[in-house]
Image: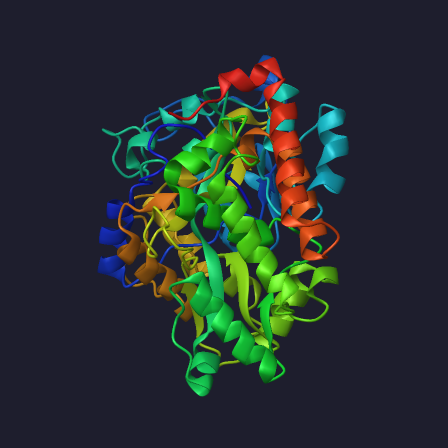
Length: 480
């Protein structure tokens, strides 16, 4: 679940992705909500790096030391953690470095005490509902600046820097005050999802306008089916719909107004008002799946898989997360957010970019091995290992072997990516200002439960923006 900075975010290298996807018959991958990490033994921070420092060479630019150990913590969510185990096995085989592997969803619970004690893992995929917020870690001086990794020679073509092998714009979500301190590894799209089988059975057409979506919800309700499910205990997900509608209605300026903490980001924004009124109409007309406000993400998604609702909001990790709950003939499909009247972006426009942030703690005990591990994550071999294990694309251009075939839902995001072209957008406030993001989610939760009205939602969101704007450090983050 996530967002980032100013250069290249809007375009996010769609053409590169499309060329690759078209060649492979693949689609864009999941992002926000999962996490994986890796930690190690050694010294604390750069001062103790010598303990685990080996000889540097062309193939080992950071001097990762044979016989040393790497401590890896992986968020075990929609992508599982088999991909990380495959990476670790290869790392051990090629460099003689063994890994301690932890796969968990309790990132904060397991890692906060370790960060506090100055004994963090070496590499962490900091994602999921219980992630540690990147902006908080950064402000506490806990994150390594990843410039050294990104400026290192690519494994596949040493004449190129690692950063030059990535889809443009995908590094932006990892920016804090101009430094890249998190590597968002997975190429992700966000939007609505539905069952192709249910649509076929009911004779529904893919809705391109919000009015079309409401008409389907009305028909569904008359047949005892919920219109929209959302992951009520995690309002991050319903904000996919709300924030996408704002961006599509008001264009990139409406999106940037929120990221740039504009005094009229919400109150005084026609796009924000129309978007929140549109979502509230679903609530008011009783089109929500009954009980959805009290469910976790997997509970809500499983009921959706049981045809108890037509639509659900999520990122492209959804298919992987629901593999065991999805009927074989469900035919999962991705849908760009339908349009409000007078929208500035086309129907095909989608929120897209990179998700699943991997970090190297500044006090990792085995920094040379952690840097080398991350460099190899951005090789074609490891990118392909990830695609095979996790049904998803990475941020590496042409990073997946053509033999890899992705599943139907992921395939539909490929088609959506092709159709979107350069019409992609991505919010950054969720990475830059986690406290503000949480306040906006809390307001959305109240709205979906009908405890507040759209006008109050706008007021609460604007208050969160205004509060954040008072922090002098906010001026270091800006989108042009």
